[in-house]
Length: 222
Length: 264
Ligand SMILES: Nc1ncnc2c1ncn2[C@@H]1O[C@H](COP(=O)(O)OP(=O)(O)O)[C@@H](O)[C@H]1O
Ligand SMILES: [Mg+2]
Image 1: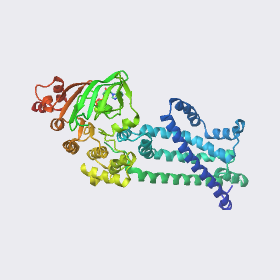
Image 2: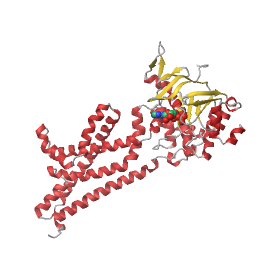
Image 3: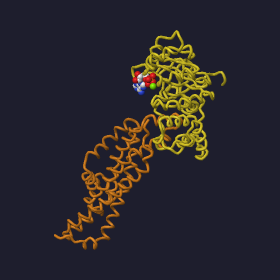
Image 4: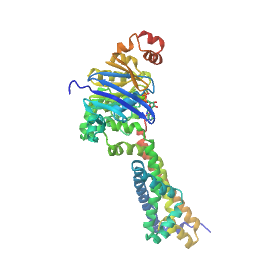
């Protein structure tokens, strides 16, 4: 087996197309996961107690099982309960659910970390609950949670590789198909590693940039 | 409204679980008066202030602000009737609160902290709100720090911004909960000076403090709280002068050294 760069150049358009699918699913899945996770966290914190308890089990179930198993059950098990999805839709739904469970826990830790006094100061100048959430809690949490949100979003990218088992035409599927066809696994997986790593570094760099922009907002010592 | 006290606290009881923290407090703060609330740690000073600021709900009793019931009104048989939230907010708008921990919002500049409620709560255009906030900041001597974030300000500066934030909404009553207790000694002066100016301008103030000097010179009235009860109340010279209540003596011994206490 020899390393043949020509093979990669030859299949470049396919790889680029699959990379597009990966990036789209990653961004859409993460964004939806962040939003749904926020809704779950708010419902659990501010909603009635039964809602908190009702959401506890599914969040723990998702966090307690491998994504591979979840996506397999959703795609191949879904039709048994009348949920027949094409692979891309199932992939996006699976990523969203998986991300929402983790992101909701991050949001929850953010709510806990906001000093009670910051909220009371808002109450004292007449803010209602929604105004306090929008103007005080959310911005403060963004600053507190940014590093762990970036970290989770990086994990989300790597989880998209698992979507290859339900034949989502994403990067890992495309490259391993190529490897199988030409018996060029090493080339393929080396390229895969480099592309994922590059994306992760780009994501981290954006996170660091945002963090440096927010660094002034760090909590003041009193 | 003249003649009505700014704050009237009647038979106030506050319990946390089984512990009674405020055990039947009666207190009147007249308009334009500076009432200093003293007492050992854990005696319920913060809880009393927080009840007046409606950050805590009392279990029994009533609070009136400028003659208007706060949170609860007295029913025909003296029972507590909860007032609608809108009405409560209106009464609450008369009160400004300053905390020991400043509690500035870290993601906003000094100017942003002061202007925020004018925009969000009062619906003022941002530009007008910032103009007013700027005027308020210069009153506390911080116009040159308007663009700084709380993390870029000293404790004393942060507390002055917090005072400006409360004043921007034009309250006629200001509550202070140990405003200088988390400051280095050399920074307490600048905050106390701002409070002194405020008192001179005629603001009604209820101040929890361990600064005996401030209480004695600025306070119109001293109130001493012990174990949830108001045990001494009077003009500074009555409370600190001799003969002194035994608990005041003990308190002064704790917060001043013995030598200083005898000088009073
Ligand atoms: N949220 C709370 N839950 C339970 N106990 C409390 C709470 N806040 C205050 N306490 C108790 O009430 C008592 C009075 O507290 P506080 O009003 O803070 O006293 P002070 O301000 O005079 O030091 C203390 O014993 C304190 O432990
Ligand atoms: Mg206290």
